[in-house]
Amino acid sequence: MRMRATIAIILGFLILISISAYLGIQIQHTAQTIQAELNQAEVLIHSNRWNEASALIDETLDDWSQAKLWWAIILNHNTLDTIEISYARLRQYTLNQETSHSLAELNTLMVLLENIPESESLRLNNIF
Image (cartoon, rainbow, N blue to C red; front, side, top):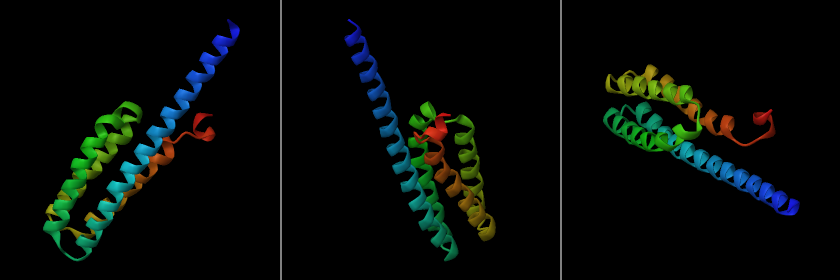
């Protein structure tokens, strides 16, 4: 009887660790995909190709909106709200063709996206 309980506990723990690792990988992949698209938007802004940059930013916002649906289950909502605010600023700066503000907000957004996988990954320093 004790052996079954021990096996069940170990199995449950392994399932929990596996799910956490999988979610961490998915979050990192999504964040990297959005960051790569934002890097392309940065190049377009530097080239004063505002319409293309704006369209690409809107695409990344759509990607973000899709990801946010399942990220909201496991991530801090303050972080998600900060990313939403950053996207709103970026879109306005891009629509108004403000180069320095657009680039600054774009870099802020990329840092926010970069920090999510790091802060939410399964590491001992994040547990203790």
